[in-house]
Image (tube, rainbow, N blue to C red):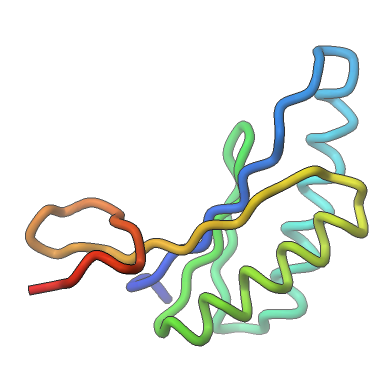
Length: 100
Protein backbone atom coordinates (compact mmCIF):
# COMPACT_ATOMS: atom_id res chain seq x y z
CA UNK A 1 0.00 0.00 0.00
CA UNK A 2 1.18 3.50 -0.79
CA UNK A 3 1.69 5.52 2.32
CA UNK A 4 4.67 7.80 2.89
CA UNK A 5 2.78 10.80 1.49
CA UNK A 6 -0.84 11.81 1.87
CA UNK A 7 -3.00 14.26 -0.04
CA UNK A 8 -5.96 15.58 1.89
CA UNK A 9 -8.73 17.18 -0.16
CA UNK A 10 -10.89 19.23 2.20
CA UNK A 11 -14.36 19.84 0.82
CA UNK A 12 -15.89 23.05 2.14
CA UNK A 13 -18.84 22.44 4.41
CA UNK A 14 -22.24 23.49 3.11
CA UNK A 15 -25.58 23.83 4.83
CA UNK A 16 -27.51 20.68 5.73
CA UNK A 17 -29.63 20.76 2.57
CA UNK A 18 -26.59 20.34 0.31
CA UNK A 19 -24.65 17.80 2.38
CA UNK A 20 -26.37 14.75 0.93
CA UNK A 21 -25.63 15.88 -2.63
CA UNK A 22 -22.04 16.70 -1.71
CA UNK A 23 -21.48 13.19 -0.32
CA UNK A 24 -22.61 11.68 -3.61
CA UNK A 25 -20.28 13.97 -5.57
CA UNK A 26 -17.37 13.25 -3.18
CA UNK A 27 -17.81 9.52 -3.79
CA UNK A 28 -17.78 10.22 -7.53
CA UNK A 29 -14.51 12.13 -7.17
CA UNK A 30 -12.96 9.29 -5.16
CA UNK A 31 -14.13 6.64 -7.66
CA UNK A 32 -12.76 8.59 -10.64
CA UNK A 33 -9.49 9.35 -8.81
CA UNK A 34 -8.97 5.63 -8.12
CA UNK A 35 -9.42 4.96 -11.82
CA UNK A 36 -7.03 7.73 -12.95
CA UNK A 37 -4.33 7.00 -10.35
CA UNK A 38 -4.26 3.30 -11.23
CA UNK A 39 -3.47 0.35 -9.02
CA UNK A 40 -0.77 2.19 -7.05
CA UNK A 41 -3.17 4.88 -5.87
CA UNK A 42 -4.99 4.43 -2.59
CA UNK A 43 -8.05 6.63 -2.00
CA UNK A 44 -10.25 6.86 1.08
CA UNK A 45 -13.16 9.11 2.05
CA UNK A 46 -14.32 10.25 5.48
CA UNK A 47 -17.11 12.64 6.46
CA UNK A 48 -15.72 15.75 4.73
CA UNK A 49 -12.37 14.78 3.20
CA UNK A 50 -10.93 12.63 0.47
CA UNK A 51 -7.47 11.15 1.04
CA UNK A 52 -4.97 9.86 -1.51
CA UNK A 53 -1.81 8.03 -0.42
CA UNK A 54 1.40 7.94 -2.45
CA UNK A 55 4.92 6.55 -2.23
CA UNK A 56 6.66 9.68 -3.53
CA UNK A 57 6.20 13.44 -3.37
CA UNK A 58 5.81 13.51 -7.16
CA UNK A 59 2.96 10.99 -6.98
CA UNK A 60 1.36 13.05 -4.20
CA UNK A 61 1.50 16.18 -6.38
CA UNK A 62 -0.11 14.27 -9.25
CA UNK A 63 -2.83 12.95 -6.91
CA UNK A 64 -3.47 16.49 -5.62
CA UNK A 65 -3.79 17.75 -9.20
CA UNK A 66 -6.19 14.95 -10.17
CA UNK A 67 -8.33 15.38 -7.04
CA UNK A 68 -8.49 19.13 -7.60
CA UNK A 69 -9.58 18.67 -11.22
CA UNK A 70 -12.22 16.13 -10.26
CA UNK A 71 -13.55 18.24 -7.40
CA UNK A 72 -13.89 21.20 -9.76
CA UNK A 73 -15.63 19.01 -12.36
CA UNK A 74 -18.12 17.91 -9.68
CA UNK A 75 -18.67 21.52 -8.55
CA UNK A 76 -17.11 20.97 -5.11
CA UNK A 77 -15.23 23.81 -3.42
CA UNK A 78 -12.13 22.07 -2.10
CA UNK A 79 -8.51 22.59 -1.11
CA UNK A 80 -5.72 19.98 -1.31
CA UNK A 81 -2.80 19.75 1.11
CA UNK A 82 0.14 17.34 1.01
CA UNK A 83 1.56 15.82 4.19
CA UNK A 84 4.16 13.17 4.95
CA UNK A 85 4.29 10.48 7.61
CA UNK A 86 6.79 11.36 10.34
CA UNK A 87 8.10 8.06 11.75
CA UNK A 88 9.33 9.50 15.07
CA UNK A 89 6.27 11.65 15.80
CA UNK A 90 3.99 8.95 14.34
CA UNK A 91 1.66 11.46 12.71
CA UNK A 92 1.11 13.26 9.43
CA UNK A 93 3.20 16.43 9.15
CA UNK A 94 3.31 19.20 6.52
CA UNK A 95 5.47 18.29 3.53
CA UNK A 96 8.10 20.89 4.45
CA UNK A 97 8.81 19.46 7.93
CA UNK A 98 12.25 17.76 7.80
CA UNK A 99 12.38 14.08 8.62
CA UNK A 100 15.06 12.51 10.81
